[in-house]
Length: 235
Image (cartoon, rainbow, N blue to C red):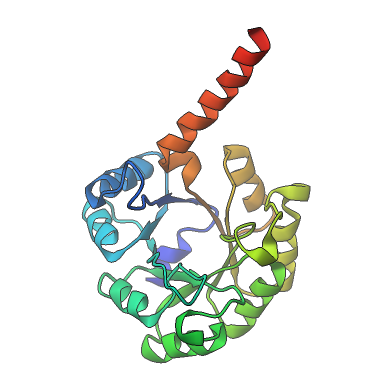
């Protein structure tokens, strides 16, 4: 497993996800999306739910970062929030499991360090990725012992509201890399090939790209909105 993960160094991971309210929501479609990503040069896949991962595995032999997105009434955390989601993912054994590693309380009032300890006790050999939103959270996750530190949630939490990962030539990524000892996976608003290359040049282990590749409704919207501006200018 670790050998296949090491092959991700300097490479692209494509996030193949579609939630229930999205047009491409389907394990079958996500499997084909992963195949298209592989043909395009992706070295790994990030995927949501055991069902999607199982289908993706039937189409490609690439390392997978697995998550389960699920809402709970007593917590803002929705990326692999409890042991229930960890257990589901372990049925398909993704090479890496990612989870919310922010400072927010998990369902049931669990802190990150308590939950991390429980996961490591139950699945000691499983590689884990921390989805963080601030430098402080990244340093905390590194200290706890996460194998990978991700910038997935920058700008998506109250504590990171207004932050943009690409601001100041990826200053946040540069600071995280300088302060942690584990591998940093760059993720979040890396929506052009130039940005992807830049984070690798800065020392990120690998880069995850999602919506810019696998959410056609968002890609189409960006074109439509830009053309709307042109109509206003011309008209």
